[in-house]
Length: 151
Image (tube, rainbow, N blue to C red):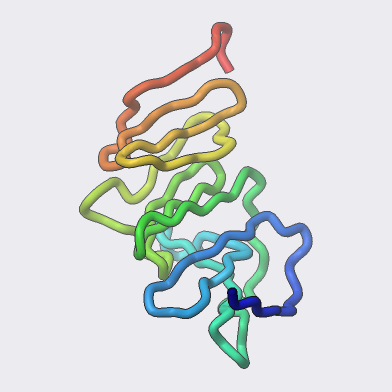
């Protein structure tokens, strides 16, 4: 087993710490932040630490994002990432560009989202009380559980 030590500063608070596996690279990128690109609404920018570089580890040193809700990344295959920010689920590639064609590029929720999970062709959207199961390709609600009395 190969064990390698990387010493680098992390932002405080650390709201995100997720590996992004890049095809052909020995080590994954470590995503420590994500933010929307202001001019392009369907694009996100990953703030990553490149463990494959010997000189410049940080791929972005921009300002921290202003999101107040949960931030979550879910890598799908070798080139797709689901990004949850401010009750918006974006489908992007490893460069942060929106993925068009096979499914909707972005889903906006009218309720507070705690987390998302992906299995097969389903997205499970978890909230404080209850959940929704969405179709991965159309974002249509397949099933929902809402407790009596609303959320």
